[in-house]
Length: 196
Image (tube, rainbow, N blue to C red):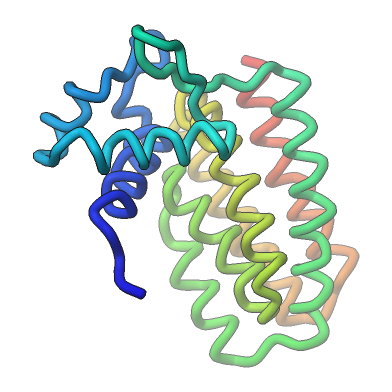
């Protein structure tokens, strides 16, 4: 089955939400979204309804859609789930990673922006070969990334990059405890970014 126009709009809107290119304070109106992406309203409506079902948007009849913002409690809950799920991925990779896996992780760790951080953590899960884990981790990243995007700084980006490389080095050394410690420090940096 091919990618539909609705899928393309969905991906574009989701990316714009994740990268803070759409304001969380203003209503998304179908006609304006259609104009922005150069499509008719039907695929926009389908895409926006899908984002509502996923909990990324809230629909207000005759007004439009608002981007869902996480409360502090909800953000910390996503971080707790990330630690459990990504911790599983790290444990798996400590015992089962190949040289190619490490090479891929090092490439993903090069970027120190929010998008690069998301890609790195998603890749950790993907390299386990467990598609369910990858879906869960990617969803948690997508849910929390907007908050991190708004509150992050270049300084925290550099720290994340360093944690990623230390985590990879710990995986190479088969040091599960150290790898999990760097994962936890990485997530705690996100927690402190939220609290600022």
